[in-house]
Image: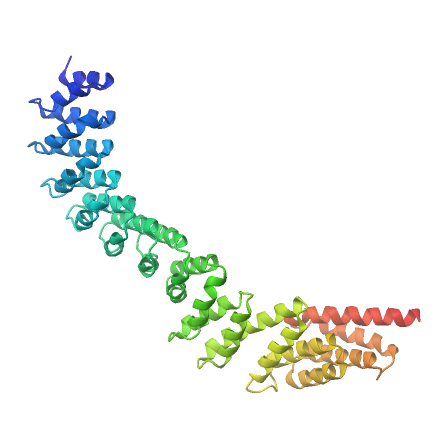
Length: 420
């Protein structure tokens, strides 16, 4: 039986004493295999002999002894493993970093941080992985710096550490990592950002929406969609005052999706933004809220917002937006029973639009109101319905709901008139 076969027999028998004695064998391969076997058995009584083996002249034995100590996970070994991070052999240093990660001793954090600067890539990668397992906040800045490491795997592992620690300081660096040249690093960064669902991430993510990199924009947008709840409102409202106009644009878009009165008031105030593009985005968001309120039959709130939008228009003539607002204002007044105001609003809308379909629709709606008010007879309704049918093809998409509503109302009135 060869010496190596003898070591295998000792391992099968779990003969720790026999394996410990083999650590002193004259054959380097026997000593090394004995250390490996002790690591597999994981008996704490082997810790001291393995620590002694760290003084061996063979780097193979030292590397295997370090690995075995990591498998046993006895904190008593930490001090010696930390010393092994300075070993002349990169394999020993790398195994020592990995072993310290398995033991998870907070006392190893600073030495492992230093190991992130090691000349050997495996040592740096194992140090980053060990810091991930320990999860100490002292490692955040060093792991952020490691995102610039020349090695792809070190960068990816460093992101894993930042995922576990979940510190807001990592947000911007992780967003930048979405532009990494390696697809796995970018994917890891995206996953990490999904873990940081924190209001502190909002401003950096809003800025990331303007990246020239489509991957960055896509992932920043996805993360912003996931950060939900009341906690996002105040940061987004604050973002409407950011120095960067693109941040203000993106904040307006997101606030337009949030059904909260604080968001509405903030957007209304932002209608006077100094940047035209921002004003356009803000206006779209405010219109969404007004339309939502109308759809939910919150007519008073809807009227309030549409009237503000009208006041905010620099001019109303030849202004299709203004025509739309006046038509919705008219419907709100009609719902409240003020048909005279509703008709006046439609006359204002008629002055604003040059769109053929919209004009025909408004004319038919005015006649419909006249019938409701009593200015015209019920026999005017067929003409109203003809106008509605004519206008339907050229009707702007955002007015089709009102068209359907008015058409239904005219048909019901006509039916009741025939029944009388």
